[in-house]
Image (tube, rainbow, N blue to C red):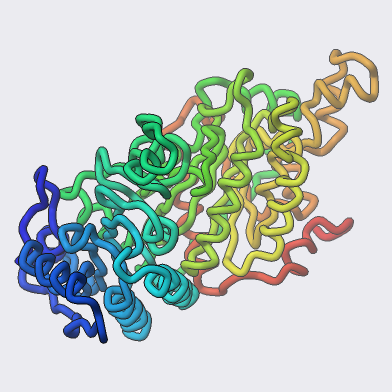
Length: 502
């Protein structure tokens, strides 16, 4: 068995023993075959075997994690810095393909300097084979979860280290494309400190979390419970009927005023009170993270989903929701398709950013692409209108198979003050514009846009926990129904917006 690396880092077998159930691991590794190699390289391999206690730079196999069958591929850094040559690539590809064939979730734990320099370009191009194997695994709807360990650089970081559905990293891990020693040798200066760290990658939306090794099993088990488990068939509760007096109880302006209360519950309280489990994700995976959008894997009751919620706490006048939030949302859409999960979007925004930065970031294009992706999405979709629904930033998350709304939620092309400015050249007519534009959830229900209204008794801010739990019950029902019937067609999704569709 390999021991810990220098500095107390865990070797491949120690990490496997830590994460998997005792005695459950079965190794899949056949003896490596190298063909003709130089005496010097043969000596390097012999020394690496002696030093590491393993016969190649990756260890693969299957086992159980909290009773759940999984496959594992893990790097052993003490074997020639975890580098990938032909034999290691063959082992990785064989293991990934076997995991796919056996329908197993795959846990990857890279720790590598990249391509094995003793083998050069023939080894370098193996990253293409490994990437294809990971892609086929994901295309089969199987989870691929990555734990980046110190250090992971080069071709490994640029292939199987960066393709996870969920990716977390070891605290303080060195993670990057070009190793700092190579950078220094090539450019004659040190690489800037603090860039190639797990914590910095998290801050830039490139990974989903920073987790110590002893927390990995719990996190992965929770993630797999969401990704792999499906709710049992059950009778879906009948929607609470929309009482006729809801239309008359409050007019549109009063509804809008209530939706803007600072103490109105948003997505964070909804998740706290109503979700049975939440695994927060982070950013686009491509270098952006916007606090205006919360992305997560979640369960309501026993119904799993990819959760995309506009976060009223993360949107401020200084930092409104930017185009990066919609790129983050589109990552969630891709995850839902890849994992075969329903997608839940939550609308609660005073509006997308109106600024030079938003224009330069392509806000209009991101709204368009989000609309197109949602209409065409090959996954069941549920939208919750929770509060404010202002402009294109709200519309971008609306298209869905089913739309439910809180009683005091609303949707408008502009804030009523903006509509008043256009029509009346002042803001004083905002209440009048709100009443004229059919913005309320109850108006949209009457028009056939909204399927179900969730009452507030009398206002969500006055009964935050009870309201959130009531919403959670509705979400569990609707998600379970969607899982049973699968995604709707684009034509079905847009039919509700046609005049006279109610």
